Image (cartoon, rainbow, N blue to C red; front, side):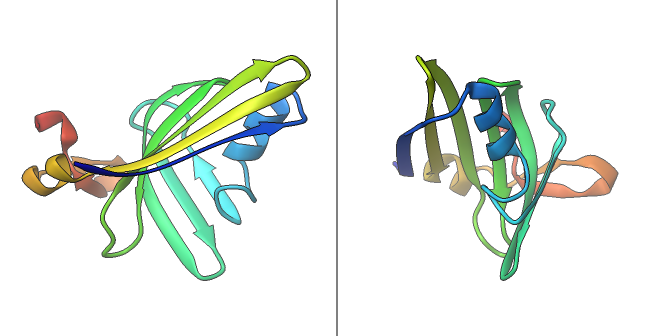
Length: 124
């Protein structure tokens, strides 16, 4: 079982412009810092919330998958996929929380500078 939210939208802009928008400040959160490499840190902050996490996978300009969680909240996986479609970009966003993995595996994921993020899904 998993909880999932899926959205797809057509954006009247080239892929590079959409990529820059979704990975920069303003779209996912007011402030965004992403180390765009597998295992890189991810940090998001808006006026009334903040989340931290890590980058699972990235293909610059095409795909970004990361995990994030706010204090005390369960971790969720977010995947952004960008596809060129003529003069527009199709942006697909999928956010999931795989309950059986998150609930069964309780080993923290190592992060940079001694931080840990959520359960270690690789061990499942």
